[in-house]
Every structure is written in structure tokens, then in C-alpha cells.
Image 1 (cartoon, rainbow, N blue to C red):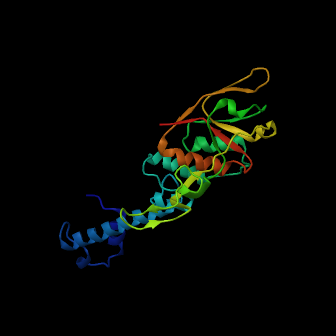
Image 2: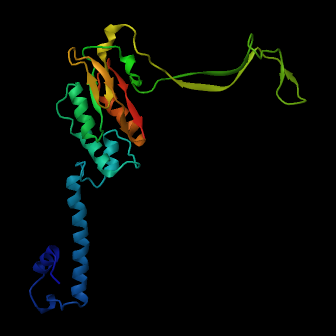
Length: 246
């Protein structure tokens, strides 16, 4: 069997003499083979460290994703994860334009299109959901009873047969509701709203958007899509999502 490069290097370093000329497939020869195998395995690991920051070859994909603020998602393919990571690493020169966002979406494996609302039309005619920023939640008390309410009373029994407790109101827990945005009525804000979805048609004369089809996206990638858009868009821009999550 042909010797590996490491085994050949070990043999070359042995002192001269019959004692250091191992008999093939015997104890000393096998020992040198074992040493060579251990060094070969270590060399493979060491060589792989040269690609540790390469999104397509890294042996530490999970760690590199976290390093760039991406939560590893085991429910999508490795190719998609690597493409998403590559887009995050290879930012290049960007001005947060529509073209930049379209390019980043393509690099990350999303089959969607970005449409600028120019000339501006009322975004509400296309439906869809608004993506403005990361979720903001309103919290409050889930009030079970209050004075003047439909079930208001002066006292109640916590336990049957127990003492009557007199209260003016009480709540059982807290609620948490996402803050919901609405399309502005004032047309001055319409140019700040863009769309992410499928194919669109425009008026051939004026260039105004007429229709926007929904695009299909894997439901396991919803967070990825939202995060990418929020990261790329400018602070004052709002996105209307025309997406079907499958």
C-alpha cells in the first residue's frame, strides 16, 4: 500500500541503520503507521480551520451563524443556511436601496421581488401585511371585574363556603398584544412604502403599480425574511408583505 505523505516524512526522519528500517506489516511498521494516521487526522482538522470564516466551507456553521447574529435554523437546508450566511458576511458597499434589498433577498435564497411605490399609489389597495420594525407589544391587566362592568358586584367568594371578599375590581393575569400599524391616509407618506411579493403589473403609461401577486415562502423562513428586510430597509420606510407562507 502506498505510504501517506506524513508516513514518508516520518521515515525520512529516522536515523540510519538496520534498526530503523522496520519490517513491513510488523510491530514497528504498524506503530509508525498509527502515528502517521493520527497526524493525518489532525492535519485534516487543522486544514479545515483555514475555511472557518468561509460560509460555504466552515466546519463550525452554527457558531459562525451566531457570530453574525443569525439564529441557526435546523428546519431549512444547509444550502439555504449557507446562502443566508454568505449574504450576511459579504455585505459589500450598500446604500439600503431597493436594488440592495433585492440582491440580498436573491443571495439568501428567497424567490421574491421588491417593488417600489413610484409613482405613489395608495398601498392599501394591494392588501398584505405591514412590516415596520421588530415586534412591539402592549401589555396590560386582563381585568376580570371592575366597578360599572357587566359583572360588577360588591363581593365574591374565593372558595365556596369561605369568607366574602369585597373588591372594586380585580384582574387574573396580564395580556400581551402586538402593536398594529395602519397604512397612512395622507398620500405624502405613500412613497415611503414598498412591497415584497410576487410579480407585479404597472400602468404602461404612468408606471403606477396595478397588481402585485403573492409570493410563496417556506414558513420556516418567515423570521429570516423579516429580519433581512428590517436590516436592509431605512428606518422611515415601511414594507407591505405580499407573502403566502407554506
